[in-house]
Image 1 (tube, rainbow, N blue to C red):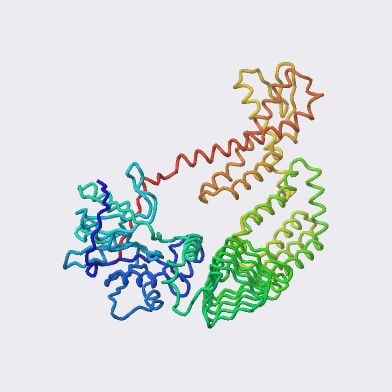
Image 2: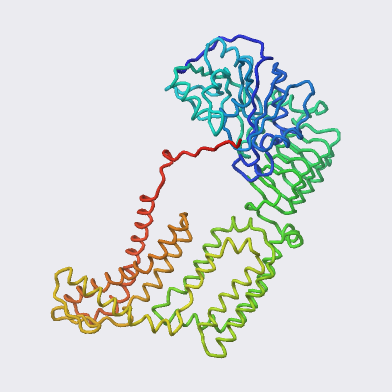
Amino acid sequence: MITNTNEIKAPDIEDAKVLILAGDKKFGKHDIAGHFNRALWPIVDRPVLEHLIEQLTSQGARHFVVCSQNQCQQLKDALNLPDDLDVQFHQDALARGTAGCMKDAADTDREQVMIVLSACTIVPPDIRQVLSSHTEAKVDMTVVFNKPVNASGSLPEVTPVYACNSSILKYVPENGFFDLKEGLLPELIGKGHSINALTISGWTEGFVTWSEYLAEVSVLLEDNDMLVPFLPAELKPDENGVYISSEATVDPTARVYGPAVICKGARVSADAVILGPAVLGENVMVASGTLIENSILWAGANVAGDCEIQGCVIEQDVVVPSGRIIRDESVTRGACGKIAVGFSGAVSRLRTSPQVAAAIMGSILMTVFVWSYWQVIADLWHIWMGSDEYSSGMLVPIIAAYILWSRRQKLSCCKIGPCLYAAFIFVAAQLMRAFGLYYMYSSAERLSMVVSFISIILLIGGVSLFAKIWPVLLFMCLMLPLPVSVHSAVMLPLQNMATSSAVFCLEVFGLTVTRQGNLIHLNDVTVAVSEACNGLRMVMAFFVITALLVLLVKRTWWEKLIVLVSALPVALICNSVRLTVTSIVFMFIDGRRWEGLFHDFGGYAMMPLAITILVAELWLLDKLFRVDGQVLQIVYAKKN
């Protein structure tokens, strides 16, 4: 049952307990949350959690519990709070959920009202109004929104503030994860308890992502009355709505347009442009010719000259080299987002970036590699152009390059560093090449080329990069033709299998078929299953297609393995279909005139069929092994 109330009473809130949910540093949805707990993200010059406790204290609250997972000591050390405040920090080794944290924080010896809100709430609601509504409604829980409740009475998808009586926490288990929205609220409604929905405007919900953080701080900067409590007393605005600390240095030729805050120790050099809303934290350095627009730079950030920073949050102590163009990113130490670099920035990166150094060294080694294996590459090209069986090999390097390009963002995050063990792999590859040259085994030379390429990648990029791309490197082996001995060993069995399967399919259709070796006699027509029709070309082509599909789809490793192994039977099935259809068609047309066309076109026509079979296979695996998310329930048990 949900009720609404508008009549307000002003009760004493000193006895209420305020529970602030701080989560942990990995709770956010971006890398910046992996470095700092969101409760410590600064609003001007102090953490948002410190500002929140200060605002709640000004409303009369005196008892606080900050609930976090493995981050309490870090939070305690970062906050500068009055000694007379009752602020406790509660830490759980495992996630407890909102309701679980409420039960852990409540006093067991007395009944009390609890206020629950996110540590990332920049401007809290009027707690006295919340308590007044909660008391007058005579309910066990009040849910506070800053948006109206939907006409249907359902709750909007927001991060609300809660007020509740501690007596309802008897429904919360002592251990394990128990959420408020999905656990306690349904339990209360099922037990017949009343829930009060209250709408109060003028406060902000807790941010989750860096973009929400940037948006809420921008709104705060636009409202001067709301902003003033967050500023140090020394900061006064000028005629452009810019707050500049007396201990900050702004060059006379720099242009700053508000709303903007420049904290103490910050330095803005000549010809720099700051377009608000923007915040420059303590000791931030902005070099000459740089544009900062709608961005927040945390303490100690250093932006070199000729940069453009737009719609960004830059973590503390980050150094942005010159010439960078960064838009709509959160920039962390070691960040690897999409960054465009000007000429001067490129020169700077040559001296500082291990990725660029590795790229230069890799380019040199690859040039030597191509020169050394040029004859082998030329031989491969002739094989691809002259052999139907291995013509698909020419697509493999192109496909591999496309896959690596599509993963460039993830690969750019890899730690680049040489792996000296790769030198042993390179030596082994050269020994393999020497063996092939001495005994005239071309297949050994070609294999040594792939192994040498892998060793260079490992030597320059290191283990981290190699671990990300080893499937693509293994895929490149498909560009190599089979050794002559293997090729000769499989040709005849494949030819016999193709003939047998075609005869079987024709007999299934009720046709009278006589087989003589690899000749199929069908009525008055004789169809010869030549070596070119044995299916090896289709097997090699389908392995390339299947491997590409496996590298692109997001499935479990065993599903990918099943699809990859199925490439061989799928190729043989498609080849049998091609031979069967060709034999039937030759009953009605002159096969000698159309033989070449049907041989080539029939192979191409089987590609859509093979892809359809593979897609159907993935669909079947999804239907057979999919776990319904509504049935699966994960329970986290709290350690004793």
